[in-house]
Length: 380
Image (tube, rainbow, N blue to C red; front, side, top):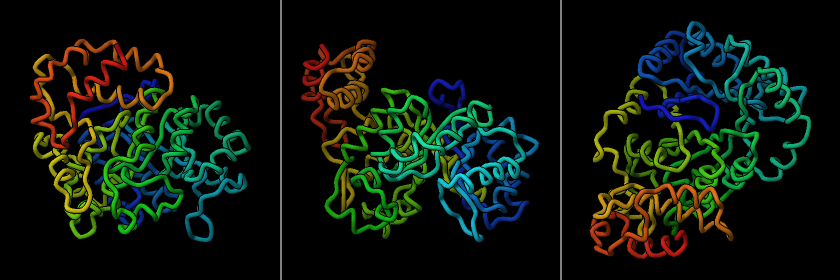
């Protein structure tokens, strides 16, 4: 397992995480065996957004003897009312629901207390200074939650969270299909394939989010890496061709500030398919061959930081130069932190000889020579 650090928390999480939402209908033995399999393979991040008492109880039983081996994302505002899940900010419901989570998970602390499911900017602005956040801060003050996170599908909300120094972690839906979609506060929009007609490449606001997180040292954990399974099926994918779990995971992990991909799995076989990423070849991981030849949508002309341009004849780290350039041009004035990141590169864009070797290898037909000229003019 490869591990990545969450912001400045000192916590290292495996790049493959356990999204446990499908454990609702599983037996205790099935949940136990899957949790054990995860631990045996180095998986140490667990997300529990679910409010269903049965799944919380099963997970708690499964990890009770190994609590110290797990980092848990526990959600504040996910409640169980009249035998169904309800998201709420009603404190009469929020507090007992979170206390229930602690009880059923058999723990007295949650590593990442997640501000649950905020998909509207207006809602974020409403709750960030009210009694809901007072409760979140009290939990942190009392060491019941060790760090504050937020879950959202909306890049506009995520941008606000990334600018909030109290929030160190954002759980965000991330995959090559969702990255083409304009911001929306209606999650169902992402799963309507008609909405993808005519879309190509990463939306600027999502690219800006990933780079904002890099600049503010806000970590991203990934939900919906397979777009609810649609990317794994040719007939349901907006690209008109299927990607593999390994390719989807590689795409998510190559985004700036991405730390762990939380795969929603039904069983050990599905977790095993995700863990194949750890031993996969570069060819197996290569999503670019799909995204550049897709019959319906493509990423042509846009750098995705895949690294196929390497090696550079003068040792420029092209993908990092492009990444810092993309981050810098989002601002009217160059942030000192980005300039510093660029300055630390041993070989900079001004060394480019325009030999063009990199461009023969770029699967997205990016004009890399022009990018190096632009970066040199911007940073030097």
